[in-house]
Length: 396
Image (cartoon, rainbow, N blue to C red; front, top):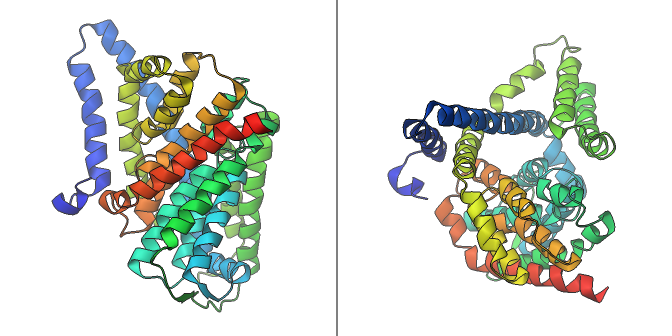
């Protein structure tokens, strides 16, 4: 929060406190058995983080390559008009991020959408609005399909909702995202142009782009039909990318594709590491179980809404796991409301979701304080989406 004041990189801060929290757990353990239990939970936490790290690393390497070669900019030129109004761009970016995140993971959707935004010649405030809109839209799109968000998949696998019911969430997601775009459009005037990219692509560039999109599709299909973890599919796609890169004999412009791994911004990965270690510590000391107990004390319509707000501070995956463990008695519309809230609620704070953390690393002007300026608008649109998510199923 105070990065702009203390001038200490957020990755360093979170990593320090993430490590310190576990060190303190070991220091104040009452017995050798308790230390052994803490060590066991730490290993589980690090395994989860390692899985996310590898997934992020493989995704970011693909995007780094495609961005360096100008493929993303070219794709934007084909998809978007070369010149358009800022207000229209807001709507298009919102819908693009919403749809993309529904069919692929949030990390990929965020990286591609941020790359799209950066291809336009935008002023600082306009770029910040676009980035904040991307975070909200990406998290909103992910709640409607099991491929879009882990918490959606968890609630689906628990048998509380089916695929058809989840698709209903596209309505409140789309309405709330468009509403946010309209709110952000006030005060925005003028037109914007995209940077013209005149590049020729080699057969290797085209092949790697095809492998990237094929990997996204295979990630969804393999997970649905064979329960293969997404990280495994993406690592396989990355290995194919490396093998394709070896077919090029020239040294011009980093043809050794493996070099693109060095272009990954490891600040993002270290920030994830610190945040997830802190959340793992909260899970270890049973804070999340206490949250689940508080959840059961309120009426579901209120507790689901609050759970979404809490997910902006606590990782939504362990939070959802704790709530599922509490086994609340909910109707279908209430389960859909919970699915929406824990999926979208993380958008209220920049540190509340993977999309927010990646955006903060990619858009240098986006700090915790800068994002907080949009909190009222984000809260309004989150509330609109939540109310629709619990009311629309009862009307259909």
